[in-house]
Image 1 (spheres, rainbow, N blue to C red):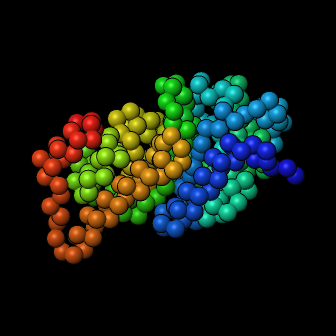
Image 2: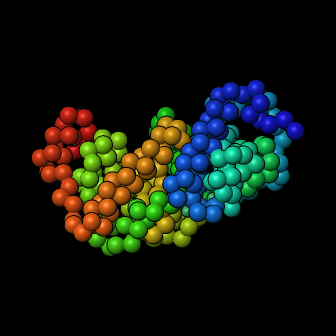
Image 3: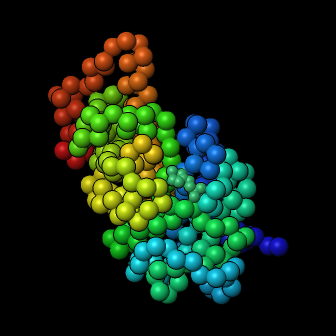
Length: 269
Ligand code: 13P
Ligand code: ZN
């Protein structure tokens, strides 16, 4: 059977980027078994033929009513699917969904009836707001980076902006490429609507959100952009932990150095 990607260069390019990032997540050790998920808004590639495609099964509830998603199309990693498999065969380990007119359910339209990630409520809740705000951000990534998750097991790092300031101070690029920092969502049940709502709330103020003792959630113009932000934060966490392993508490950049950087790069204060 013909893949939806055939003859659709733009769509294939975005899905191939998802496959590339899925490979990075696996290589980094952030994607044990089926850990993590990726969704991308592909509505711009939905031509008339795609819009006429019959659903592969019955509508399924999202768990939230998301008014800006009506008629939208999303590529989603499949639930229980492995990142390392998504990397090699994206359309067998993910699928494209169409949001139904009720804005509360979706149908799968291609290529195979692969059920979307169990975190679909968090991903689609965030996409709904991105669309409402006219943001050019099309990708959301949830992953389990070892060092950041480890740090979320210490209460002191969960206090407001403690981790953000610590990570920013480890290496100058961190604030330059993650200028609004890392928000914290206290532990919530994976896949829950409460987790989705809390994630949305933190993303108002932060670039990336930490799910306590679970993972992170990032948003980007495309999947590479979302990945880069998590990668930059994780690098800073690794520097902190390397220093601790060598037996000392790292000094971090000074307040004066942080101020100088903030001004030079025109970053938010
Ligand atoms: P899925 O396999 O449903 O995407 O779940 C993985 C995960 O990381 C849940 O938080
Ligand atoms: Zn997870």
